[in-house]
Image (tube, rainbow, N blue to C red; front, side, top):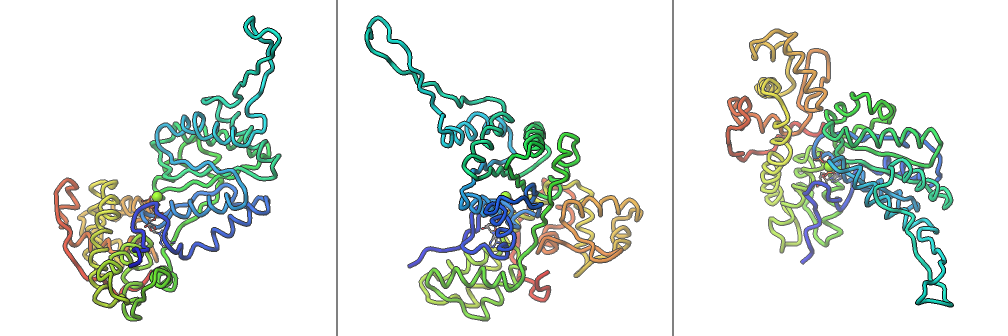
Amino acid sequence: MSENPFKPSFGKTPPLLAGRDPLVSQFGEMFRSGEWTPARMSILQGLRGIGKTVLLNAIEDAAHENGWLVLSETAHTGLVERLTATALPRLLREHDPQSQRRDVTAGGIAAVGSLTTQISERHLPSQDLRDQLTLLCELAADLGIGVLLTLDELHAHALPEITPITVALQHLQREDRDIAFVGAGLPDNINGVLQDKGTTFLRRATRIDLDSLTIDESRAALHDPIVVAGRSIDSDALEYAALASRGYPFLVQAIGSAAWSATPRTDSITMADVEQASRRAHRTMGQHVHAPSMKSLSATDRTYLAAMANDAGPSRTNAIAKRMGVSIGYASVYRQRLLDAGLIEAPERGVVRFALPYLRDYLREHSVANTLNPTARSTFPEHEPDLDAGLR
Ligand SMILES: Nc1ncnc2c1ncn2[C@@H]1O[C@H](COP(=O)(O)OP(=O)(O)OP(=O)(O)O)[C@@H](O)[C@H]1O
Ligand SMILES: [Mg+2]
């Protein structure tokens, strides 16, 4: 019996990284040729579970494959300390031919007539970040390669750590060193970081918006791993699963995984397996994507979303203001905040719709009272996927 190939966990590389080949190749080509493209300084942004971390991992793999030196970090407290005390000294030691200097010293009385050697370490922890990065770039240049620094989960909370890194990157780029940077985070958190004057340099980075997968990409992401792992999936079941995922990478893995384990001893995954799997996966999405997304919103942001959830499709902004009992101007402040957070989209003037799949269902199943009171406890009822909605 083969193991379940799907990886419905944050940061876990999926069995098939669907739809991201063009981006990964673009980075791979930059690492291979050493020629700078705008991707040299990039920031990946997208909602929870859209695949930022696993794309960062794929970009790091492409750098490794081309011999590049990679510093892979997360923007949490202690970031600079981790770089200067651990990650940079380790890479410097590994790649500096003079890492250990052997000093020949005269022997003491006990060693008359002999010479002893003393090994001194050139790369001690906690030296200056910029100096260490400069030295690493020099060593990389001698080897004909470059250095990639990645920073996941960019957030304004980590600005005291992000700012010195930004300053170092700015100097290194000005000195024409071979360094590339790729950051990643939620749209709102990226905005929070870039609004600070200490990160002005990063504002010039190329912003890459990660989108949901197309229906073909979703189908492939579900079908190919099943076949590679030695089972098959009925064609109606595959179609249902691809539509029910709405192309959302987290849901693709969650549905694939639950469908696989519904009847793991059979040869083929059926419609019944997939229907059951989709219900489970939507609950998982509620816990791991919708609930945390709601937590970071204000009560009025949530009221705006709850007012949108009254509609079966896109909502008119003036109707939302009316339902909220506020002026259009007041409601538009919250509309903008939710647009900036990437939770809603404005397909046309005066109209908004949900950007996160199944958020409407989640809000409907959690009463408006709950959305106004985030501490209220509630359960997440089962529901069927809305197949008519198709993929965005
Ligand atoms: N292109 C893809 N094809 C198939 N599955 C994917 C793809 N991208 C991501 N996934 C899957 O989606 C899930 C979420 O991915 P990931 O952890 O990278 O999201 P994220 O954007 O970093 O989320 P967060 O904002 O919470 O950190 C994982 O289970 C991962 O395996
Ligand atoms: Mg992530």
